[in-house]
Image: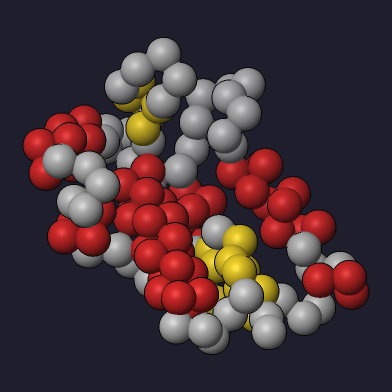
Length: 117
């Protein structure tokens, strides 16, 4: 049974301030490492976009709306000490959530052993 690798190009658009550990370069490094022969059997899937309803299963709608309202048109917006939003953050978050939902669905359906999102 296979292992899924789910990601989306939009995830690289979540930009963070300099020095922040959750940066696009980190994701690029991980994805680059997974391009080696050792990981050739991974089933690569483009992450679907989660619906607001799917995200609302674990986050109150009010929280989703507050995040949506804070996404800046340019630059960064800090929503807490650890989390910054950039113009690409919302789509990246919806794709990341969609990756997890899809991976869980595939594992529960018996189509995959596990998933890496």
